[in-house]
Length: 517
Image (tube, rainbow, N blue to C red):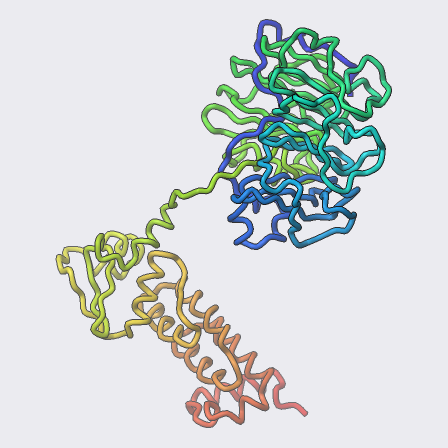
């Protein structure tokens, strides 16, 4: 960390348009954050906003499409706001905030949480040893409580938290701060802790702020004419020309300057030749990220235990994914807003068109029933059809070699890459897969058949595996028979077993010691 430094040096004449804590609409897969593995797929589909926080990324707050708010996690210092300090792996409803429409959220290291609603109200809870909840005490807050002191008639539009201090921005451009102040991060002119919200004047006197951000022990505000006021920091700023600057601590290469030397003044960071449109950093991680106008996402700093000292091109589509996959801990650097995605992928569109008579140009007649398909897809997906459909103008093909259920499952597989067939019917599909030399389908059939094995059908499944040269299934069935040998040898299937198969079974069983006393 470097000492306090004004940031005019190095960015003179540049208008800073973006600091590090802005919310944005993103169609994201929140499941990339490990903590969401505790939620069901049905619960994940309902999420519209989410924030992952805590020293190990083990706390989460999310809001659903119905504006209900839920939390789960270890609940360190009561940071989940459930009224106690009990951990929970089941989502708990946070009644105080339900229906409030969260506009912005930030968190500290304790952790403590600060939220502002669409109405401009501020709620805080969690760790409070340094008065970072702004309620005038140092008692931990176990439930969300509204902060009103000095904020009456003020509409708060943005919040930011350092390790143990808090800051808010009002709709009229005023900045208020409170909490831990050992480095002057509250901007009060002293280093005494600030127990309640206090307006930051001094360098912001007669200026309108448009954005705020916090590092562990620093605070930053962007004012409407593009100046920046900064404290103690690893800070990133983005100018209106798309240029990126960084300064502060650099022990993990988080400044992206090509070394690990701390910077006491803004240094330019080169991210390819494309214009940077978004920057991301978080006080709880030593990771930085940026997104360019061309949609490329770069990361640098601490990455899974490594130090990346220059911007590295990732395969991600947004900066949020950098923190889900690379940051330690895996937290969110901003409140995620997730739009419902009604757009169908190519795979989803193909699945929807299977057996659709309105768009199909070919029908299979099987057991007196039609299955509607598309010639071009069949030729792309299957070598068998590529050969029989070339120069074939028929719009109906009769199929008698396989049952309707089996053939329909096969055609559906070509559209979906999966099979939907009961395990007991998968043997017929295994026969088809062997006949058409569809090796991947053959493997799927074997996996499905394994799910249905029992003492009564084990010999029948073993016989089918041998017949269709399904080696993996054959070995699985054989092992099952050996492990249940007493019962299996008393079944009808064993009594009616093919002579050659029986001979081979006994020989192989002897070799593995199945008949030893």
